Length: 148
Image 1 (cartoon, rainbow, N blue to C red):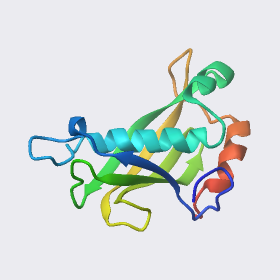
Image 2 (image 1 turned 180 degrees about the vertical axis):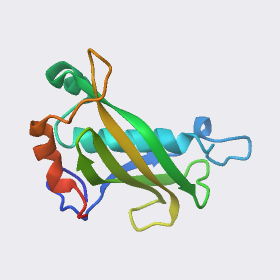
Image 3 (image 1 turned 90 degrees about the vertical axis):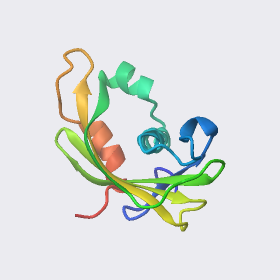
């Protein structure tokens, strides 16, 4: 499922076509490009709440920055395939948001290619120090947080 009205157990989805620029000489997606695909998935998840990265900076004086990622590469994606980046929130606490992400072939029910847990922290745009997620944003995001 997609969007801000999704239940906590549902995933946001974002489709990505694999282009030549995404692959190595063998036509297999270069491992670091999965990180780019997942960044797009998190950005589109945020956008579905009506919030752009620019608006976070302008309105809330903050941005998100990844502090850790744990990625498991299971199967390769190939040139010209369509993949779906699945994103959901596992936890929101203090300064951090923990995302579960998957990259699947063709559809949300397609073969699992890559899975990851990505931890982002809220950063003050002026001081560049970690800060708590504003309560107004936390309340917006909470309906999509997976049960603990």
